[in-house]
Image (cartoon, rainbow, N blue to C red; front, top):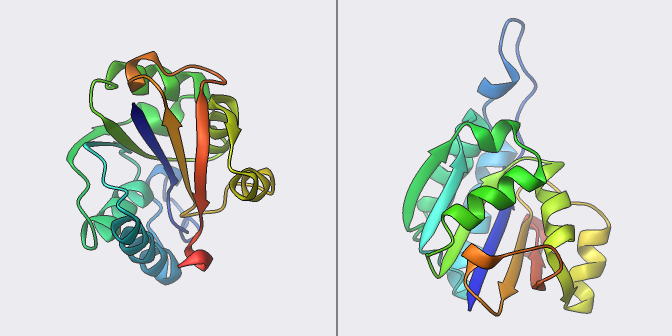
Length: 167
């Protein structure tokens, strides 16, 4: 069995003049939300074996907030998690799917598209929450019967969807 944790980066501030979108940092509420989600993951036993994180500043800072509250396993950084679509995310997940569980810290709309695509079924409350959108610092927890190297559209079960408001 494999478990995939899909975490959208926490809330970032607006880009200052001359700043690339890639370099936008978290704002104060985003830093607090990242820590809240780390604590929520720890309390629920959501501990990844490996983390795949976008190299964008806001994703890296989200990881820092999480890591202060819970174990994130071995961490790998990818520029492609900033620029790829949901299919590209899934390809990266399959490439690193030998781990029992993966945390992916990335961006929308890719996170929402991927969560919807791989979740063929799921908890009714989690599915209803995800259907309302994928907010910053939102976490989709998707379980697969096989390892993540074989993850594919419709094969996952959305077991939970958490937001910082759920604490």
